[in-house]
Image (cartoon, rainbow, N blue to C red; front, side):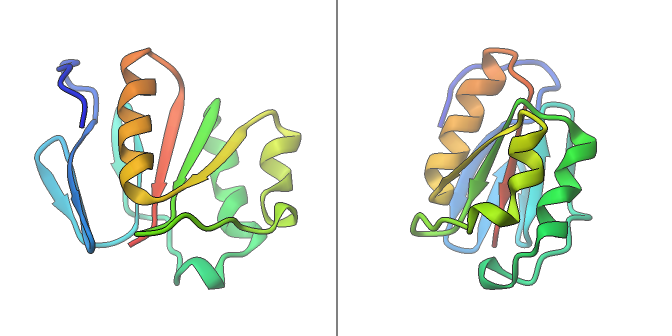
Length: 120
C-alpha cells in the first residue's frame, strides 16, 4: 500500500479476496473510490454482466483515469462497453484489484482526478 497520509483523502489501506478497506473502513461489496468519497451505489452483478450503462455511470464523475479492479486476476472488458468514456477523454485501465488499489493510492497522492472501481 502507500504510506502517505493525505488528510481526509480516501486511500486504500488493505485488500483481500473478498474485501477492500478504504481509510480504515472495510467494504465487502463492489465500490467506487474517489479522493473525497466512497460510493457503493454503482450496482454491478459481476464482470461478465457489465454493460455500457455500467461504464457510462462514470461520465458524471469526470475522472482523468478510471482504474478498474477486476478481482484476483486481470480481465479486460470489450472496448465497445467503455467507448463513451474514452470518447470523453477518460483513460480506462484494467488491472487486478491489488494493483488497482496500489495505483489509485499513488495517483491520488499526486493529486490526480482518479476513480477506482473495485469489483468484489
